[in-house]
Image (cartoon, rainbow, N blue to C red):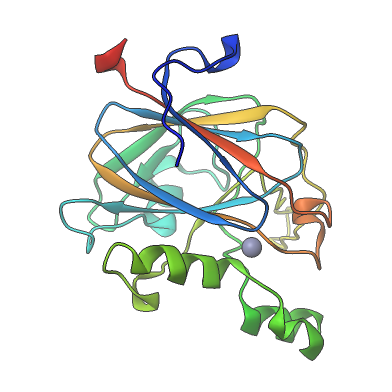
Length: 216
Ligand SMILES: [Zn+2]
């Protein structure tokens, strides 16, 4: 982990923490209430799968269903409140230079890859395995994985209700800011998928930065 008192470029100025997450790798950190996590799609067209848990009681966790119901929209975008399974706001999208994020299409797994793309893909690394690995650092297991967020993943839903994973619209340097409204465990899988266009068939690194208003 790299912790910087002051990051090096203007874009990173004021960040209390900065970390590049290599392609295909997981990451997690507790985000304190009021802190803002920025996820940067460093090279573009990279899906970032994410889960949130209340750090004091991980039984309270992100709920895709409640988030969509509360905001009355099918996509995650600027202003979206990320709602828990107890109906509380865990975090809010406070900046977004991409404009399109998904919470309907779930995360990739060895099993779903085998069903969708054929048996030989069963042994490719996948988001579910990243989540299992990262959650184990916090005493959580695969039973704790729920329907997740997919930042920068483009899953348009057509008027008839069909949804499809298509080419990402995020370009190099696009970012999304998530401001915590409670202390949350934020878990990321930098998606390794190479069988559909969610990562442009080429998984790449991302960057995370945390800004703490109390430290500014
Ligand atoms: Zn994935």
